Every structure is written in C-alpha cells, then in structure tokens.
Length: 119
Image 1 (cartoon, rainbow, N blue to C red):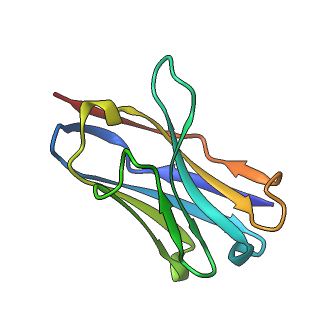
Image 2: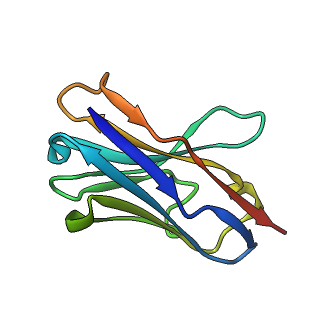
C-alpha cells in the first residue's frame, strides 16, 4: 500500500510559477511510477507527467513540455512538479498518482490540490 499527499497549490498570475509536492509513503516505492494528473472543471482527468522512481526516466504531455518539470527527492520520498510559464488553461485540480510498474492496475491517488492561474 502507498499513500500520497499533495501540497503546494494556490493562485498565481499567468506567466508565474508554482511548485507542487507529493509526499509518498508505504512499501517499495522504487517499484512505482509517480505521476501527476489534472482535472479542469467540466473536463476529464488528464495525464501531465510521470517519472519512474527507480530510474528517474520521465514523460510529459505535449501541453506542458518545456514548462513543467517533474523531479524527486529520494531522501524525503517526495516528488515535485515545478510549473513555469503558467497559463489560465493550466487551472485545474492536480492529483499525484503512484502506479505499480509491474501491475498498473495497482494505483493510488492523492486528494488533489487546486491550482488557479489568473489572466
């Protein structure tokens, strides 16, 4: 079992930056991929970025490439999402996800953190 807790959301002006944190705890985090998803009002949840805990390899949605960066701190069991050049369309609830690499059906979600970008 893995628990994930997000923090760091808030209100920011367009063009600004924000960093989200996802504190993870539980068993064998090295066998999980950590990801960020977001859900805007009236829209489905969408993939933003992900990183495998063991190798650190990353993947990004086209909409955030070059603006968002996922990283991790192994000592703190924490994954970060650094968001820059924010746009109003980035406004959403951002969710952290931990997914078992060997069995993707095993997936854990945080409660989400609100990010609002004003124009």
